[in-house]
Length: 243
Ligand code: SF4
Image (cartoon, rainbow, N blue to C red; front, side, top):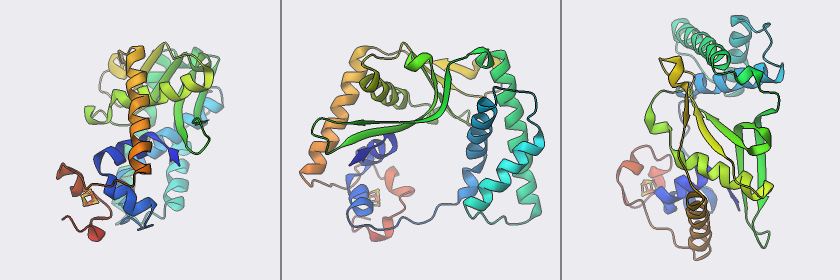
């Protein structure tokens, strides 16, 4: 079993839902991808720009092209032309906010930056592993940044950074020194890097959560969500006998 941050979080919300998806192979209801496309374009834009060494060649046309390619890949159907145009305007504006943030916070001056990097660590026994795609890794794991294309604090869960820090720490055999949310769409450019506070105990607590997931999974113990909120956006609720 491969344990990612999203799997851990989903399992803790509702073990039954993950059992329906991963064991019973129920296919979740398709979400409206238009809701997520701006975030996907922002991430891809940053990845391409960083891979080119933050050069000046990137233009609104580049952003438009990324939007077009991702829309095709995700089979997004636009309601009408204005629907597409609205999103196009948004992604171009957000790309310019990324550019401003990168320059303002000196991200473009960093030499050893890895972007959108997939990390993977087998757990003892090799039966399970932990994996994660890290948005930015600086100084060989001394500093991790997670990019969020939303100013909504509900997406800034420090545990996500702790999870990635634990993963990288397990691979490199040392914990990161700095964990940061990179938030290019915050209104004030000064607020676009937010460091989180953490200690070694946070990594140990995260490791306990991963161990708990494995133990619960192995016991085949799959209770339904205790919080009815979780059922609201559940993609497999039509297969669930508890609602
Ligand atoms: S509807 Fe609720 S209880 Fe049922 S699987 Fe989904 S989240 Fe779990």
